[in-house]
Amino acid sequence: MIKTLKRSVAIASGKGGVGKTTFSINLAIALAQAGNRVLYFDGDLGLANAQIGFNCQADKNFSSVLSGEASIEDILVDTGYGVTLVPGASGEGELAALDYFRSSVVVQAFSQLEEQFDFLLVDCAAGISPTVMAFLKGCQQRIIVGTQDMTSVADAYATIKVMVKEQQLQNIYFVPNCVKDERAGLTLFDSLNSIVKKFLFTELGYLGTVTMDPAINTSWRRGTPIVELAPNSLIASNYRSIASNLLSAQPNLELDGAASRFFSNWG
Ligand SMILES: Nc1ncnc2c1ncn2[C@@H]1O[C@H](COP(=O)(O)OP(=O)(O)OP(=O)(O)O)[C@@H](O)[C@H]1O
Ligand SMILES: [Mg+2]
Image 1: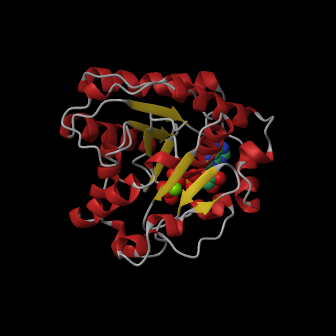
Image 2: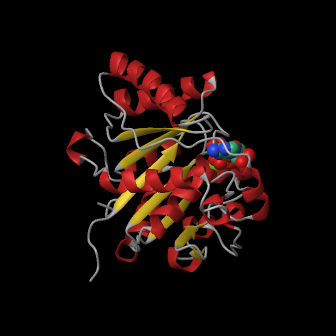
Image 3: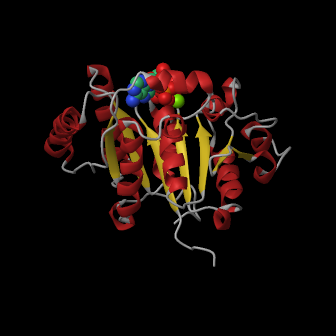
């Protein structure tokens, strides 16, 4: 029987290089290991690097879909980890800013896949460009990844502020990354959440913490995600625990103001 409940989750950060792609890849695999059919959209259309993390080749990428040369089915890549990748448009600068017309092409392309997957994860580019905001708005749930670095915290807050104040979005989670242990992650989460409560009058959801692990660099070099390379490591259990908490954290779509469903048929 085809499952009808679809989940769409966008992953962003504000500041670049804080670990969004590493997080998204390992979360995707952990969700697949839990029995979900996962579609991973490399939404970093300027600097697509999910293919490197999954160590898979893509002959075509999303630019072919936007130009009408290929259908989305033509460009799908089986990563071998139970996750299907929609490759971004690497190195094509002008694609970094999707205009409105192209956005509607994206909506149509993704609606064709709705029966085949349970989860859509969108790994966004750094910053708060209109494209990133469209992805955050278009998904049912938003995960902001951040480290203890002050500029990461400031940029995470700035991203959350735009989502809440300008777009009336809720269903926002913050995942601390690269911290010493869960306690340090909770401290980071609480400090950001208390600012959000005080100034934005809403609360962030907590799904768990990702600890710092130097083996992540080895996993990138080898092209083997850490949940596969070191399944018994603490960091792998962090990702599995976050996947399990995300599975239980059903989005409350009524809380999202006038949010248009960018991936309209997902949810
Ligand atoms: N938990 C972690 N422990 C140690 N290193 C990490 C961890 N998470 C990410 N890194 C490292 O941080 C660097 C940036 O990671 P990643 O490419 O995932 O960030 P990003 O936010 O997607 O970057 P960009 O903004 O360029 O898209 C990489 O070198 C990665 O190995
Ligand atoms: Mg990235």
